[in-house]
Length: 70
Image (cartoon, rainbow, N blue to C red; front, side, top):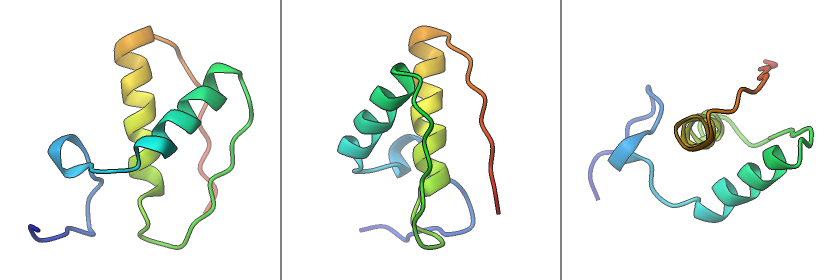
């Protein structure tokens, strides 16, 4: 396994796994459900969100409102 980078978002070839989570989040967005993602720091929450929204933008051209609470 290559070095794992913590200081940037995973994308492209660096985004691995989480196929089930991507599909679940995508389905929830398709049904216009409100979504809250809560996990420990540095667990890939924002990378997951960015991946799903990027795929939706490229495939469907849908717009979403996104809020981040810290």
